[in-house]
Image 1 (cartoon, rainbow, N blue to C red):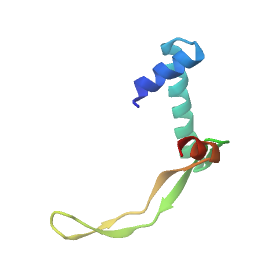
Image 2: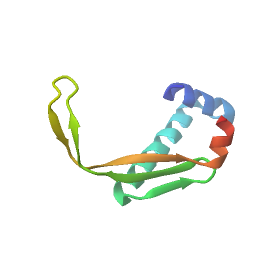
Image 3: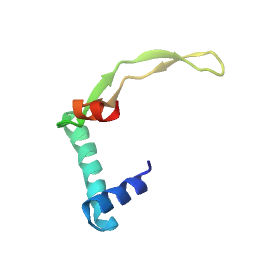
Length: 91
């Protein structure tokens, strides 16, 4: 499903215009991104899941083309852990 399809589904399910649904979805995504970036925190949507930021340690990797070892620096990456209701809905 693409973002456009998601917006159309949200609009039809909630009885609002697509433009309003798009603004709501964009605001939600922006707020999640900002909260994770500013606080290095965690956002829990009960039943759906938890978004968090984890620190990935520096490591040595290998260039697949040349086989040469390269150093991959430490970085922060987003992580998502699905909630029980989401797990049940899928499988």
